[in-house]
Length: 285
Image (cartoon, rainbow, N blue to C red):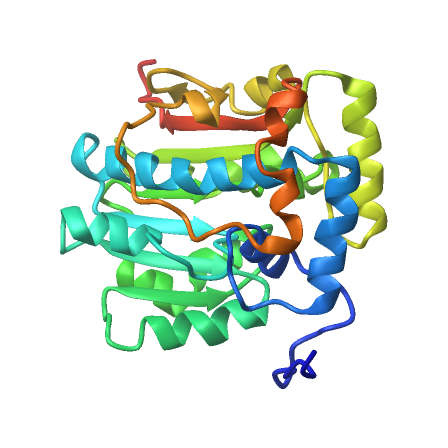
């Protein structure tokens, strides 16, 4: 196998969530350390492949809803990961060309590839920031340039809720921007859940030991975390059940090295990606 090209300033000895997640979606921008991490995790958590891909399909449906039905024209995608097909800006701008999008990720490789993808798109940008530091994001000049908080905003935390353990104060992180944003703003959220707390705790231990912050929650714990917001129909559910569509743009093929795990989510229905779209409550609610 040819030696991998390591980009300057990019860590290749510790897996990152963005690169690992991207490989599960069929992406090419990853290193051996990321692939080995995924293969090790899938041995214990075989449903991870399916639910990662279900989350990406949910992104398309959620952004489609926000743009078409909720009238959102500006988006902030937290922990966006590496660009692939049908990114937020492509879905939103395909429906409403005036839509504006800010992508946020802590992994510098996302900035490298995102800037290349968006070189000719003045209404979309990517910034390197920690989604836990909402004040830094709010004060970023690109956010101030593209996002008008006097208008509704769509904030997305897709498949990153499990990277916000309780000690990070996730409720604050998830609501800081919504608290500032206009009425009609929405939060789109998803994370891995396990209905068996003991099994979920073991998953948390394994992923955290690999150097990636993680907390598997139960569905009830997610409901409580988001209790200040109003879920839109059908509420918070297994993402495979959130407004499914007969026809939806497909994902890239599953990498051959992990293809044996495709369909494994059916074997353990207690573990899945859980979430939905939620609306900021008005003061009278």
